[in-house]
Image (cartoon, rainbow, N blue to C red; front, top):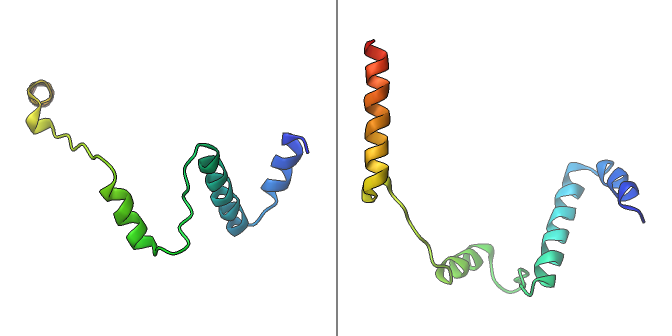
Length: 85
């Protein structure tokens, strides 16, 4: 089936069926990439906790970045000067 025909058919789906299609495609692409997103025996909350536990998270704050602090200070100073002009 050509993509144009498929897209025409997809546009006729209900909102719920479009979401099901998105879910199906996500699982299919993940599987092709070697990831298994299907978790039959794990509840969604536990699955999310497992994913978070296995992920390295980086938290960035402008307060810990001197360049960001300087840039923000300069923006605030410039805005204040413009407001007072």
